[in-house]
Length: 238
Image 1: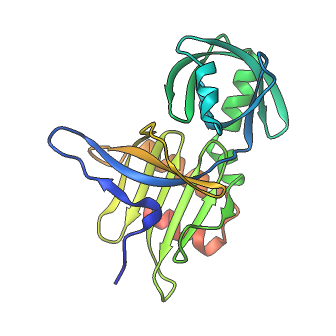
Image 2: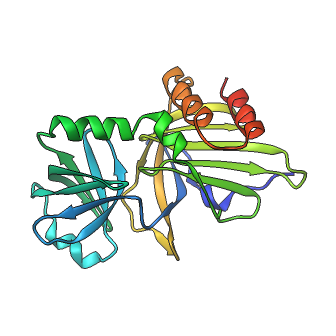
């Protein structure tokens, strides 16, 4: 008999008026990616990164007033020690997050960001993190990449969920495989030590997307997960 995971708790299912499922996702407060703002010299954790922009995570709510919509920012993006000068514009704000769109990225910065977000590279960077519950495993990588696996008391895995590059791929014994888009609900989340619980909006694809499945396979096979666990994951994604 399996139980629902509190670390990926379903807050609400899609209704006639919404195509989104709301789910709680644990994330680390401090990420490896950082942005140093030229205007103040302050350093912010980058909770999400893409080729188009980034989301700055604010630990202090009073910082939000420094980032009105359309504000232009200049600073240094630090990707595991590699530093790149970037310019961006504030596009949206939330209680503890500022969403920014890059402007006129240099070729070097663009190439570096795309290389950094290559699924094979993200997989190599997956590292085990203490999970919020004893029956699950949590592997975390750059830019909010998270792989969750749940097992029963006999050690058999019965559920898997991967969040990567604004998408999700999940499998369960009961529902099989599904894919879709995942984005933050931009609500103030609960914080427990270095972990915060963020509400995510999941929009499921009508049928599993082959492109997303290939991304998941590439990420898993390039990771340092145990070989038997890799093989299990790939079987569920096939």
